[in-house]
Amino acid sequence: MHPGTGTRTSRPAALAAGATALLTMLATACSAGGDGTGGAAVGGPPRDGGTLRVAIAKEPECLDPHQSPTEASRLLSRPIVDSLVHQTAKGAFEPWLAKSWKISPDRLTYTFTLRDDVTFTDGTKFDAAAVVANLDHVVAPATKSLLASSLISAYKSSRAVGAHIAEITLKQPDSGFLGALAQPNLGIESPAMLKGSTSALCKKIVGTGPFRTTGGLVAQKGIDYTKNPGYDWAPKSAGHSGPAHLDAIKVQVVPDNAARSGALTSGQIDAATGLDATSTRQLQNASGFTVHKTSFPGANYSYWPNTAKGPLADVSVRKALRAGIDWSTIAQRVNFGQYPSAKGPLSTTTPGYDGSQAAAYAYDPAEAGRLLDAAGWTGRDSQGYRTKDGKRLRVRHLWSDPSITNLAVQIQAAAKKLGVEFVEQNVDSGTYVERLLAGDYEIIDTSFSSPSPDVLRVLFGKENIPTPARGISNNVARYDNRTAERLFTEAQRATGQKQEFRIYGEAQRQITADAAVLPIYSPVSTFAARNAVQGVGFTADGSVDLYALWLAS
Image (cartoon, rainbow, N blue to C red; front, top):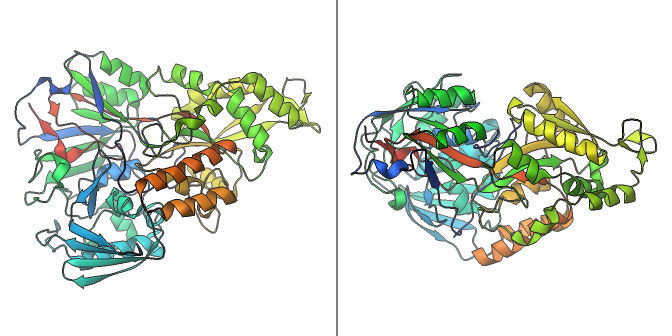
């Protein structure tokens, strides 16, 4: 998807990685009100009651977060499902459905003591057997998980030691395991529902969360929630305990940005997510509204070169593209300065971000020319494109999202000045998937949100290269580097945050040296709302926290 989602721009691949222990502070959410008052202008204590009407840009292809990797699935499933542990905005972990946990000295066994007062909204009790059923469901081949299973790739087995004591065993140490459990993708669902078909779960899930849904996700329409009146187990940092303030939430799917913005300003809805830069800028100058926003942690919106075959298998050509196109200026122009420019594989808000390589992403057309000459692309054809052995330097950009058209066209023009032909191939989703699995492309664009540098392992680990046998996966750069693989393994076995971040810093430097990604800008999560919508905040992965919201009027 495009700005404000933090998920794949060109549809289907699995995204974002799990979080890691004891993360440093994420960027503080900010807001900008058109009348200068911001969302806090209404004031007063939280008010219970009312129905919040929200419009989102895209619906998930599946509501079940165990199956779906998308930000839309995380956003829409989180009001329904809780997690064993909670990751705060500052990156710490605290109890949620689990009251406490112990980790064995060899870091292969996690023992969770669970709450004994939690009930699923279908009436069944939450217990250790439910934890086992959920983890086994995530890794089951029939689930065809596009993200959740990779978040717990170290998972071996689990068992109920007691009614409310769950023991989880890993195949190898995993420093990001607690963070993975905190993700909505590892949210706990009713075991009774898990016995049904995966297609049924795509439309309706049942959890222990502050909201429930009767009708589930309705294609091309949205989803309606009602308050779970018995909810009384929110994590400590949630800001309040007990049931949600809102009686209900109605979520509509409105793909068009202008229509979504217009519905907000005309009073048809109370809030909208994922607005583009144009709509965001307009609403920032509109009285009575506030644009709340925070930068997504994780991988920037980037062009991902096919490092395995074709002209971009040559690192010199990849470096030439990185230096010879003014990515930052193009992004700022297209997005009206609404999104920070990217200077590395990770956004600056990602814990473990290493800024030492920022200079490697500077615009330097002279260096780009030198690199292409050295790579043998010294000829020129009648249209001015570089050639080698009579063959034009052609890069096919595979995509399946019309919202990126303006950006793609400007990058195409900049590449032409460099002597590189960008062939824009906007295809249907079926063709996209087929060619993704076959590696039949030179460039793909996407972004990935994740509150952890472990996203690097998910995006650049060789086990995540999409193939017909493996299916859709995350390493669309098809990157396979022995040094990076060693670093990913060492990072998973790290015994503390400092060590983990040091290792992932080395990984960022290796990825930069190989020009395995061409970063453009950092996506921003936006939540534009009437000033009467209060309690706005964001979760660790950048999604708006629907549980905390309330309506002043």
